[in-house]
Length: 480
Ligand code: ADP
Ligand code: MG
Ligand code: ZN
Image (cartoon, rainbow, N blue to C red; front, side, top):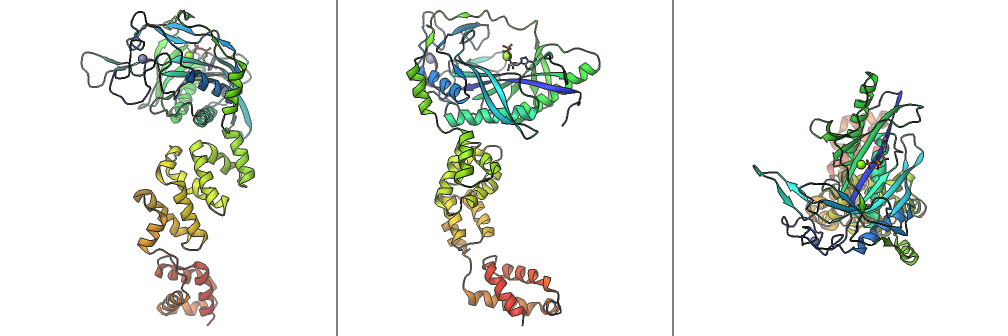
């Protein structure tokens, strides 16, 4: 979908990532997902009077690693602030966050643009804060219940500059950011379950205009696809308003998944005044050079670097390398397969072409389905001439549904390629006998019929004959 060419979109994203720490940000409660309501809470979570927060340094380390990975400035001194608001899922009446002095500033992520060039999207800041609880309404009449299990789970908020110019760029940026946090192991990146959440700020302006237009903030976007659709819709809505002489009202809008539109939630006038002030119960956060350096040493190979290495080490195209390194699980998977077979290129074709095709929406499922070494064994069977590539695809489909190994399936169904010349020869003779018409037409000069005969023999042997052998034998017999 293209917007009115006189306009351009301006988008900035605010991403909240739940960090994969074992315990919460300011107490020792576990962070595991899926426990019964209010089973993972304590007096700190419930904000009893007199409790004091104790900072979890595992979360700080994770946020620092992310800051280093986006090449941001790690502030040696940052501070926590109270963000005050009243909501049933926030018993303290305030959220501990960072405001004036965030942990990380001035980073960036490189993306590929629609036009095929590369572009750096600035990251204004990354700060640490706590997640809130959840209000439960479903199946409850006349009341709302509150589950505080999520209260206090550490979040990183990653705020981008308004550098994105299309829904596609926003999607690309999110994919990169998600891959990054997954590579770092600091967040599972699952948008459907809400461990990675994104608000999109969208405005439009006429091309050439240097001032930013009035923006709306979009919420309730729980997949990359929805982020992109909501941005498209919102930009069009704003352009329509401007074109009909109206103005944009700065507001927060909710994406309505079912109707595919955004709806006003609250205007700027109704926006909260958070009355931020420094958190009196926590000292400023000071970081030593040694700590930052040691975290830098611990950084894994990141997607960009891994992509370049795949291109040189495995002689892959930049496209294949990019697809394979977009997710750390897929990249690890590929390296296991490639390490066990003779052709790294063939391994790439199978992983990108066959496996990922099944897992379009969630590439990380790959490792849960077919173990890398099982795929490698299947590819070895092709390379050793035990089965053809075509049969291998059927075997792979069975491996996926039955969880059996390639060898077991090939053995059980008798799919081994026929290399017994006598048997193939018999099939060739039978086919020629059954097709006298074609035979005489072939001998009269219609040599294209060779393909027909090959097809018949392959069919008769249920695809198991070695195609090279079939071709050779046929040509010999057809020559008469
Ligand atoms: P707030 O704290 O109210 O959410 P910020 O100034 O922190 O506001 O901006 C939040 C996000 O909005 C950032 O990602 C920023 O890039 C983006 N943004 C700011 N102004 C605009 C604009 N005019 N159009 C689109 N995005 C914008
Ligand atoms: Mg905001
Ligand atoms: Zn707790």
